[in-house]
Length: 410
Image (cartoon, helix red, strand yellow):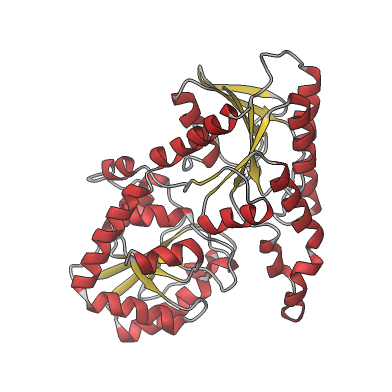
C-alpha cells in the first residue's frame, strides 16, 4: 500500500520534540511494510523557523519518506497570513503531483489531517486526480475553536456566523472513505455528517516503556538541579503552554489560597507562552522552571504527586497530550475538561474534576487529594493502568487495520 499523509504541521524526527501524530501513523504503516510519504511544510509551527528554503526530501527509513513542501511564512496563529500559508502549501503539493504522473508515485490512500478548512478543496482535487481513497484524521475542532473570538453577547450566533466553515468540514466528511479521530467526541462529529464512514478512535497516547526508561535519570535543567523536594512537601505540576486558554491565572490564584490552606503544597509550572512573565513573579509556593526538554519534563513528573489539567470554560480540547504523560507517570489529575478526559477522570477514578476558572474549586480538589493519601495512591495506580491502554504503538496499529479494511473494499 502506498500512503500519503498530508498535514503541514508538526515536528519531524530529529527536531527534539514529542513524536507527532504524523510520525506515529507513518511508523505504524512502515512497520507493516507499506510505503509512506509525509508532506510537511518548510515552516516549523512552534518557532516559525524554516526547515528548508525549498523542496527537500528526508529519508527516515526505506519505507518512510518526508517531503518538505515550501510555503509562505506567518506569525499570528489566527491570521490571513496563516490561511495563505496553508493554501500555498497545498497548492504546491497539487502542482508537484501534476508534474509527476508516474504510476509508482500515486498513492492508494491519502490521510488528511483535519482541521483542513482552508485546504480541503485542494486536497480533494489531489484525491480525484490520483484516484486514492481518503482517510480523514480529526485532530482538533475548527470552527468550534473560533467561537472564543466572539464577544459574549454574540456567542450564541457562533453557529450562524461560522456556518460556511461548518459546511466545508461536513463536505469533507461526506467525501471521505473513512475517518479516525484523537477523541471519541471528535469522531462523533464526523459520523454525524456521514454515519456510514468506516471509523476508529485512535488516541495519540504515550510510549509507556519510554517513560519507564527515564527512571533514575538526572536533570539537564540547572533550575531543576537546584530544586529540592522536602520530605513533607506535596508537589503539583502543570506543564504546557502558558496561554490564556489554559486557566493559568486560576492556577496562580489557587496558589494564593493553598498558601493558607495547605502551605506544604508547592505548584511547579513548566512551559512557555504569553503569560510566562506572570508565572515568573516570585511566590512562596509556586515555582516556574521555564521551558524544559522532554526528558526533564518526564523526570520532573516522577518527583510530583498531582498534575493539573487546566483549561478555561468552553475549551474544545478533549484529550490533551499532557494527560497521557501524566497518566504514564502515575499522577492523579485535577482536571477542568469535560469531553473524553472528563469522562475518564470520573469513570476510571484517575483524579478529581474542578470547575474551570474557579480557583477555590481547584484548591479544594487539590486539598482533598492531599489529605487522603490512600485515595491518592489508588488514583495513581488507576492512572498507571489506564496509561497502558493508551500505548501509542498499539493505538496507531488501528489506523493500519482500518486502512487495509477500506482498501479491501475497492
